[in-house]
Image (tube, rainbow, N blue to C red):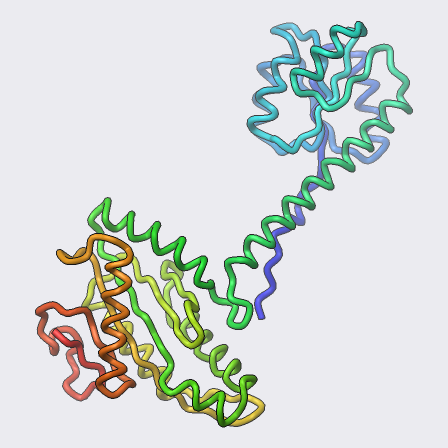
Length: 331
């Protein structure tokens, strides 16, 4: 089973010091580097903005009085571009009003000059712990989001993910008048596998089918398990002719495949319904899905292990080109 890990292992919190006092800057650089931090500096607001655009800063040490303006005005830029950065204001403005103004501008901590280096380092370490915690929480959130869109059995995308992607791709195809095809694939007589060999064997067969679909599609295609034994593939920039050829390739590959589980060796078949847009009778995602679903229903009703398409007038042999193929498009 695929392991999804959204943690960025290359992340190393670094410090941007925005300070125009060269003596203070030299002292900070010595202490920060000695304590293992990566540090960069800027002497003006303009330079600081360039640095913010160029890197990911875990912590920003910000002077209040800079040659080209008030350092507090930089807080809005930091929050907009790097919302998880920790801002420590280091300034000679020591009044209560200045501190309140600094916190209201968006800083997380406030240290006045002259400062005790040990106290400053302790505050920096505390700020870095908060940054690391925020990064871990963000990574965890992304991981759970990815898992919520993944089918736990097959590692394909699940129905929720399919519905989101389907709506987006249909809208893109409609807006730009580009072809989009869909194939709904359903295992034939799947219940008999569960009944005869058990659900563990059925799960193994589903994983085998998922591997065939994953290996048999392009990177631009979207494959999902949308039901118990039902899968869907979205095929962008794909005509109906091309989609039917794809469906036949999948059908024949599955028919000839041997899927081994602990219980037995299985040979299975699938029925496939194919639909394509643009289509004069399809104006919504639901209509598009229904067209493919109805084609699948016809494939099941007409004997299984076959392909049916949406109803439209196209020459069968022009589509599939092989009079001996088992897949037949209903026109």
